[in-house]
Image (cartoon, rainbow, N blue to C red; front, side, top):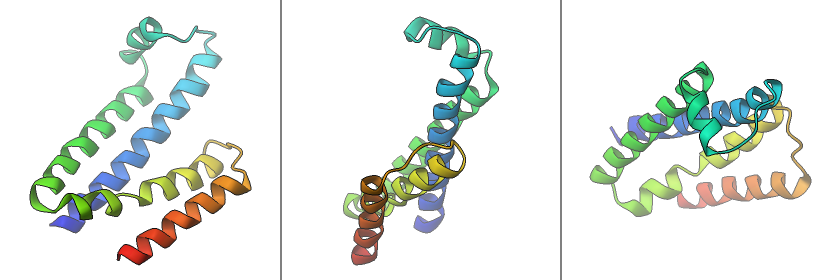
Length: 118
C-alpha cells in the first residue's frame, strides 16, 4: 500500500505543479491579465487546467497524509523526492524552460540521494 500511495503522491504532485506553472505563465500572459491574488481567484473558475492543478494538488496532499499515517516521516519525505527530478525534466521537455547545468546537476544529486536511501 505504501508504494501505491507514494506513486499517487509523486504523479499528482508533478501533474499539479506542471499544470499550475503552465496556466500561470501561458494562460495569464496570453490573455493579457495582471498577476495578483484577485485575478488568480477570478480565474480559478474559468480555467480547466487550473482547476485540474488544484484537484491534483489536493489528491497529492491527501495521499501524503495517508502515507505519513502508515509510514515514518523519514521514509515518506525522501521517497517523494523524485518529484524534483521529474519536474525538472518535464519543465524542460513540456514547458520548454531553460534548465542550466547547475539545476541538472542538482537533480542528479537528488537521484543519488534517493539511491542511497533506497
